[in-house]
Image 1 (cartoon, rainbow, N blue to C red):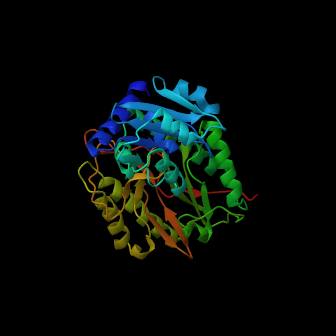
Image 2 (tube, rainbow, N blue to C red):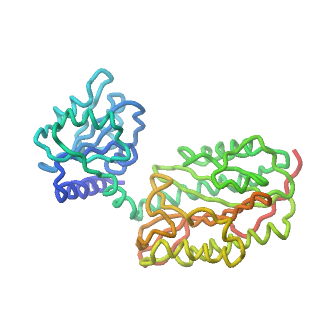
Image 3 (cartoon, helix red, strand yellow):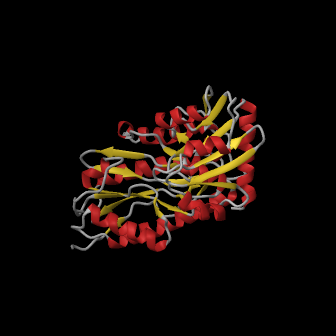
Length: 374
């Protein structure tokens, strides 16, 4: 993205500071810093902050000294302040962004620890803290065409990894072995990293919505649930498909068809102006009519973008209307502790014309994997 895009985002945030009477805004979440500057960094324990002074619309990016060159290249046109390992970062902040009479300092309250807040109060004595987090999340909830294009690339990569995974399934292979093969393939296809811990679950363990892969062998007749995502070029993807290994029972088919119908109902309900809760309700009603209502135990999905979980929360209590540029998952599931679980997850966005587009293309009809024995 161009430097003008990042400058426009910072200008929007400064305007928010002015409106709310906040003198200094301090953005310290690495993801939000990247969103507002283009500079991607994991500072570990070191100091990273984008500081904005609403009084003179000044902006400075404080970065670890070892990352200064990368910051200058990525955040062109933005003043870079390097912080060495022997510097007192908060003293440097006070010198570079003086505002002793500031009544309010904006921070991401969910990110700033109590220890950091106390240090900030020593730099800006008497100032109270205002939360910037929601304002930034409100900016991030609507994606540009460029951002949706980056998400589509991440989707393409993860679907390639999923197709490879299916080709590698063998009876006797463990969940951990298949997860390792998936993550190897992600990197080979161009992913920067997994977007979250890869989920591969088989048999009754597939009924664990956020289960962790273990030394459990894939067996004939089992459900095999694969929930994977990648981050590529700063943006995430997220897909779940559930398979049967060997031969599907009638009970497995009934659960699968109910979840598939709920997935399609949720997508069909998605459109600009429709409240998020209606998407959840459409999927939940479908599963309920099939007799599996109590086994659908989570919201229908979540927003995502630079982070794997963002706004909007696709829950039955969220009345926020969908709008063009919003990107989210639709992922109903049924989890039977004996038979196993089924989840089918697609990545969806709202087009400029208000209709829903689906970024994931991997087939959703029940697929039976005829796997050889190890």
